[in-house]
Length: 266
Ligand code: SAM
Ligand code: SF4
Image (tube, protein in one colour):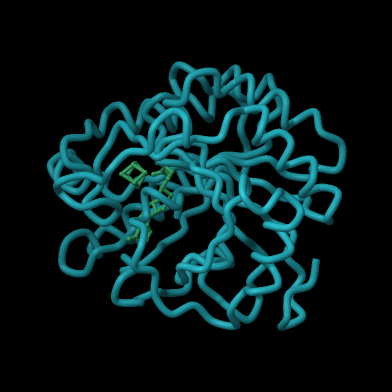
């Protein structure tokens, strides 16, 4: 579907949970966020229906995100169901990778197209600090598992924080190349002050070629990462929520005050 600025919107990012097994400093505040109740979170049946409507409206690229998508119970069933929907060209996932040793082989088997794995540092102390307690060896094991499962064109997403890990850019690039991954660097963004940047090595952040909208885990269709404009799937109805989210897409985002990154999915 075309938005008011003639951009073709065909990519839907779906957050399947607002929970996570890490607590990255740039993604959520120290005190955490108020979690939605089970009742508020979209069921897999609802997500499937939304994706079917999306395909009908011309969407063909989908990404599962979170929170951490791999901690939601039954995630393999959702991937299997969505992968079987005709008309989907790409069904990808963005993950911190910690649970890939458990899931990578099956994710591949049930039809996931591609993975983006987030890794901001190759130094255990920094990784622990930026993720508030994460274990680097688990993330590295996840990357290894993705390779062994046969995933190709895996992307490594690194958030660069000035003066903290920006000196690791070359090392991360080298690590990515050695592991057959493509490195993408994202400068730490701030939803509330409206600091956003173009993704180095990806299309994100370039408003003139924006192709996406976002679905939150609690069923709100968001027009833009950097805008609070969102439409409730359950109140509006699925197709109407799509039409409104696309019809109200700003030319350029400014800020988003109502949600943290973990509640949108990046
Ligand atoms: N938990 C999964 C992960 O970390 O890959 C998926 C959800 S996470 C919100 C999606 C992406 O958003 C990650 O690559 C993460 O690094 C990125 N992200 C989170 N907060 C960010 C921020 N403030 N600026 C830039 N990227 C951010
Ligand atoms: Fe969790 Fe991903 Fe946010 Fe880190 S970036 S807290 S892993 S959702």
